[in-house]
Image (tube, rainbow, N blue to C red):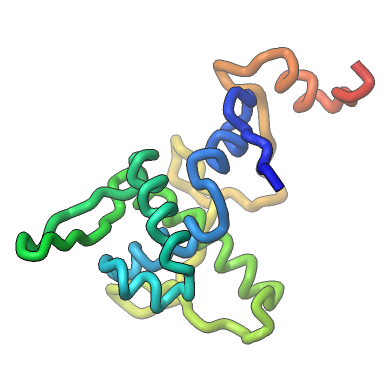
Amino acid sequence: MKVKSFSGMRCSMAGALEVIGDRWALLLVRDLALGIHRYDALRTTTGIPAATLATRLKQLTESGLVKRVRYQERPPRDEYHLTEKGRDLWKVTLALREWGDRWDASGFGVPMETVDRANGHLVSLALVDCETGATVPVERAALRPGPDADNTVRRLLSGVDIQAQ
């Protein structure tokens, strides 16, 4: 089955999904963030088929999330590292992991936790006021049209049923 492309859709989430590609890509971002950089190690930790891994690494590299780094000349061997763009995506993997832990999505409980390196205390993702730095409860969060919103986005955020238009 051919997957529908989200390119051209005026939605940051759709654009991000277009860049990421599929669920294998997020597992690769997870492992690269954990410091696993070599092809064989990535294959082992994810269980991804070799052809799929090669394709995903190529796509992640082309999208600017990953860069290839040569670590050996003879024979030529490369490692894969997250770029700044890829490291920013790590927060998405944390959010998915937190959700999966809360709702036991894997059926295996909580296999890993995020902690503060300085004191070992558990940490979690939070919404933060960009001006004050204060944490904002999720109940107070809302969406509003951004500076580049079109009429579809404005209708969506005003509660108008877009399909009826």
